Length: 221
Image 1 (spheres, rainbow, N blue to C red):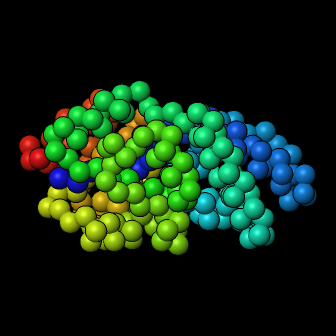
Image 2 (image 1 turned 120 degrees about the vertical axis):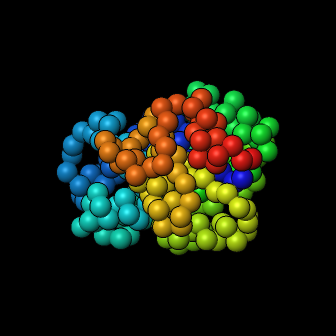
């Protein structure tokens, strides 16, 4: 059985790290005359977590020139990587225990994220992710195509009879809907109300994952 995890909002509690980087990038846009001065709550900012960078900027500031979208996006990414290297990366409570349990049960674990490659590499090193995960699929490496379109590439590299996608955003659930695999929605992440309604199972904490896997797989390992 292969279990595919989203990263931010599913394994990694990204809110503070992202909010700080987002505010710095927005201040740069204000200073350079591309945005109006305003204040953002953490909740407003968190709606963009788990969304790939091009989609985020085209939705948030569609009139912003592409070069400034890229500049702001790279600033956010750079600030977040610096924060990770500075020891600010935080996994949700219970994630380490849950991942170790899945490995002990014989599950293969992969990450499928809308993030950039350098961002994932920084977390791999800082959090020791290689002790649990066999592969990493970052949207940047595939031209930021949707996750559901990256899944066939993942499947070709890691063939299996059973796949389960675990995540906290609608993009994770679409992986299951398009590719006919089952999904687990993480209510403790950054999803909006009803965003995970189409998930096969929804969980309130990492500790609930193993029972959800057993339910979806019919006890298969």
